[in-house]
Length: 411
Image (tube, rainbow, N blue to C red; front, side):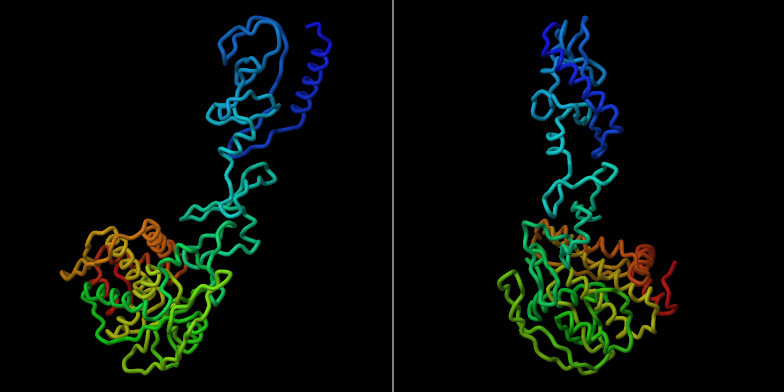
C-alpha cells in the first residue's frame, strides 16, 4: 500500500493494539470478556467469514478464529460494523460494548441504573431470595426502605405508603391490608371456621384487637409468660388482664403517602379464661394478617385445652405449622376451587368460599409460606420444620396427642 496516509493510520492502529495487549487482562462482565480487536494488514488469499468473498489485498480483521472485511464484522444486536478495539461476546456472537450492556448488563430494580462493577470488573448485585428483585449493594446502606410485608425494596419511581409507626407498605400489599378492627372480624370468623374444620373448635369467645406497634409492644411487656424472641412482634395471645389501645377506624392516606387520622380507643381485657385477647398488628395484607391470627389462635387453643408449659421450639413450632396450613388452604381456595382443610385423622372439613385471588396475592401467599419454611430461628424455624415433619408423618391429631403427653414432637 503506497498511500502515505494509510501507512500512518496502520502505524497508529498497530501502536494502539500493542498498548491494548500490554494493558493486562480485560474486564469481565457477567461472564463476557471485552477483548482487544486485532488488526492485520498482510496480503494473500483470505475468505471473509461474513460475506464469504475473497478479501484479497488490503485491510482485514482477524478475530474469533477467522478473518473478516472490516465492514462485515458486525454487532449481532444493531447490525452495525464493530470498529472499536474492544467488543463483547455472548453465545459466540460479537456485540458492541454498548449494545451488550443494554441487552445483558443487569439494571438495578431500585435506582433503574446499570449495576456497577466491583474492583475485579465483575457485576455484583444483591437479589431477594424469593422475589429475585436485583439491586445495587449500596442500597443496603443508603436507607432505601423495604415493604414491611413483602420485604421488597422501594424503587425510585414508586412511592410506598408510610404508616404512623414508620413502617413502609408497598401499594400491592396495601391493596389487601387490614386496617381496623371491623375489617379484621370477617377474617377472624374464617380462622375460627378453619379450626372447626380441623375438629379444633375454640369454645371461648376471645376478643380480637387490631393494634399499633406501640400498643403491641406495651402489651407484650405486660405478659408474664410467652415466647417473644423475634425482632418484630406482629401478634400476641394474651393471658393477663390489661388495658389495650385498639384501632377503631380505618385511617386515611394523606399527603406524602402517609397514614393519617388513626382513631384509637382503650379496651379493658377481663380474665374469664386462660386467654384474655389476641392482638394483631394493623396494616398488613389479609393473608399475612390471617397467618398471624392462625398462629396466635393455636396458642389460645393449646392453653384452653390444658396443654402444660411447652418449650418454645414445640409451642411456636406447632403454631407455625397451623399458620402454614391456613396459608396453604387459602392459596388453593383462592384459585376459585372449594378445597377442604383437614387433618389426616379427622373426617370433618371446611371449605373457603373466596373468589379467585389476584396473581400478586397468590404470589404473596407463597412468599409468606416461604418465610415460615426458611426461618432460621430456633423456635420458629427449627420448631416449624420439626412440627411439620411430624404432622406429615403422623397427622395433626396424633402429633397433638403426643405433644400433650410428652411435651415433644413425635419422630
